[in-house]
Image 1 (tube, helix red, strand yellow):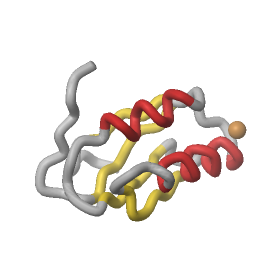
Image 2 (tube, protein in one colour):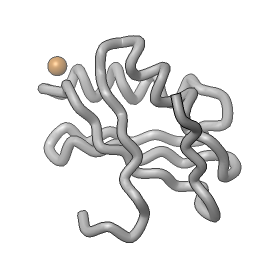
Image 3 (cartoon, helix red, strand yellow):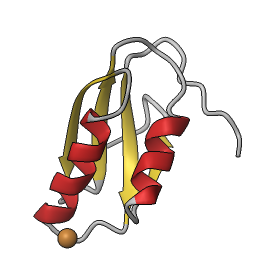
Image 4 (cartoon, helix red, strand yellow):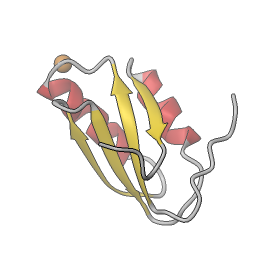
Amino acid sequence: MSTTDVANTAEVVFEVSGMTCGSCAARIQEVLVDQAGVEEAAVDVASNRATVVLAAPGTVDGLTAAVEEIGYGLTPVPSGSPA
Ligand SMILES: [Cu+2]
């Protein structure tokens, strides 16, 4: 229940868990773009990554919770870490 602050960036990369195929990725992407403050979301099943573009830097707890609700896990990847 901690708050995840993502400072100084509007683009956040997440590690996605529980995703096994393209339709998982599509579901997750649909949920992400539906969240307030999200401008764009791209989910890549091959790398288990989701890239979200936020309208403004802020917390991403709502995104994590929304994705957990449909049965997947979302963990922010610190910016600057190797792909
Ligand atoms: Cu699937």
